[in-house]
Length: 361
Image 1 (cartoon, rainbow, N blue to C red):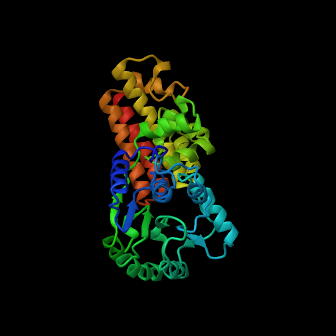
Image 2 (cartoon, rainbow, N blue to C red):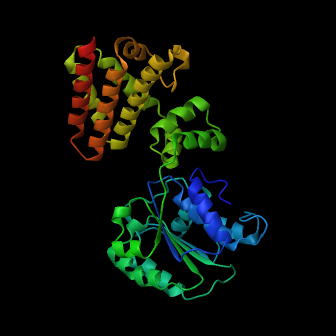
Image 3 (cartoon, rainbow, N blue to C red):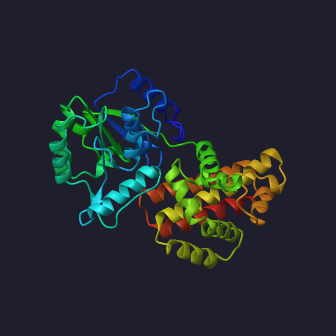
């Protein structure tokens, strides 16, 4: 049980115990950043409760597991935010896509929500007993996307659910769920995955090269969804921006770094900029580890670069100065999350790093 889910050891132990002892609550609220296994756990619980193989739960081979994996089991309902004009076929295909890869970010074009009509249909069907399984399971993914009407409509059902119905709500932002829903569910926090867990999963599941897996895991922010996207999109362009910034901070021409800041901001993608800053932080950490361990250039910990700027950091800066640069980068990432003017953030970051370097050199 839960063997294919990445990390989350304590949550695995908890649900293994409550499922085997038949002590499940009537409703759970899984919360945490995207890509930490919330939907993966929900699907696995649904399979475990309805699997027909008593010796190997879930077996993924019996008719019940197969139907769940094809989104065709009458007792397992998966609700996700949809675009109002999406066809039934498109919705079904998106659900199939999600259960086949629960860490994948599956989205519809346009503004999505979980409407009052969807919840009304759920309430109408909730009175029925299981058709062919042992337990009815309703999974509401990204439940924070319920409209206010839908959220209020589901309250009664969460308070007095049918005996054979289990609710699992998953949310990326707990603060967007109304308190009355939170109070009616057992909350389970999904913490970010560790860098080591993401690295090992990339190597084992996706056959990623160890060096690339090390790099991606360090900028994924604890989300395997992000790690998978980085793998598909590649990080070459982001590495180029990071190395270019390292290069220009050693130059005296201020126009160059102002032009660079404008070029980076013109990407108009906050996540892109944050990833570039995260990679720069890795380069700074490389210099730090180099100084601590006196490693050769080829043995530097993260191995995501091939230029001489890392050597300038190593030769010219002490541990304290490298830590100051690291702190400046982390503050800049935090400011991006607070929607501060992006161009100003980048210019101030470069200016502050140049001040640190010029004090030392």
